[in-house]
Length: 89
Length: 479
Image (cartoon, rainbow over all chains, first blue to last red; front, top):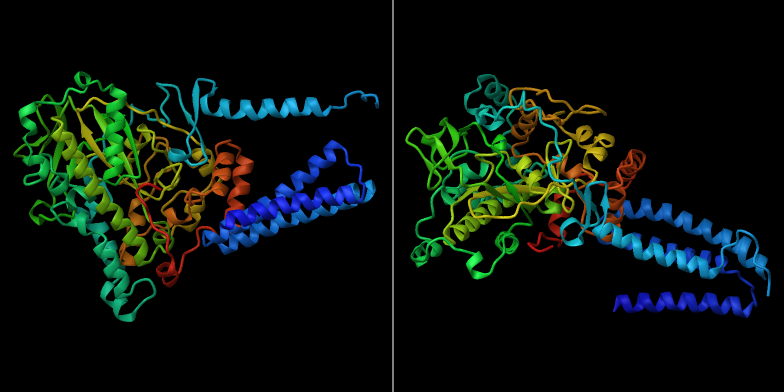
């Protein structure tokens, strides 16, 4: 059941991104799309890391690695927003 | 249509390159070779590690045969607690008092903890098996002879003579698969085959204090390889192993992860004792299986031969800084047993997955060892012994067993801190598989970074005993 929910959320996020781009009539190149997809995948990886470590009864590891990966995810998102999405609009 | 700029990669080219990489990488890693080594990836056996199997004739250890001699078991630290007056006196001076600990309800040393720990040894210390389990005379489930009164002994297998697998259409590889499967069904977590290397067998066996027959304590007699029909003890205590018994089935038994995490407390010692009990039951059962097929089998716990080099030869893992076998799947969190046999089997090849390079850059076990028994720093490996209980002639990190055992004595129960803190001791999850793949890359810089991350993440810290009782994770035979 949880996997179904996670799958639905993932599809929903991608649907949102695609519709946002279309709605704003953004012109993204193929490598900008690639960076967007990789960024979303990295965000998913961060979430999976935190939940896996929490499930292993390793809360400190979840905090440390989640913090590190989460920081990278946020920086990636900010850079994408600033230099890709805003410029493309 | 826009002109293609010079040096710009088109989408078509990019997709072609990534498709080629994504197909070739797994093919290369599963079936590939680096130099003369074979590269293998098996999630079931090795978790996420890319395992290198060195070319035949290339051992994973260095032995100076001009120096190396078969070890006299009299010099191991358990035995020295029988005859070595200095060792005995030093330990008596610091010995912890379990009754006092229980009365004071010392955390991790309460009555519940001691009862949990001692009961875990039930199979290993009953049925006459204690000496075989810990190191001494073959008896009980480790008997040299077929066990009387068992179902296998009562069956009329003798009427059929020795099993001829070739006549029944079994190849040597299939026979080997059968034996390994049997070992795992009987309770082993890992199983591998090695050929007998006499260097790993004790020159002389010594019966230490752990036995169901106290009158045998101090028995000190040779182990010899001769022409004989079956393994047997001579009147003077000499153990004769037939030269025809050329194969050793090495088995590793995973110990409970949460239990070990509580070391130096009761649940850790219970995990260890449970490991010894499973060793005894499994080695004894496997020996009976082989005997029912009409072949000789000599089940061994810690006794008769050194389990770690045999397990290395059998491809179960590599030797670590802490003196333990480091397995890909469980790290050092295993106990070892073996069965020597003359049933023809196909030996496995030793493996390499980055342990030596990682241990060079790690040293977490040495930093956390309560007794200071493990060598610290880089380039510490040596052929020299550190005391009487270490054997010269093998290039390794020699462990000071005397300091190690003193911690056990003071603690009132055994220690497994080096196992608990080892970064290879991790659950079998996708995230740790990714880390294992990086370790197999043998990059010292990356190894150092991973050790720092391991520390920052809190791995290896002691688990509170009360928290242990709340968790619901267990060792499963097929995990």
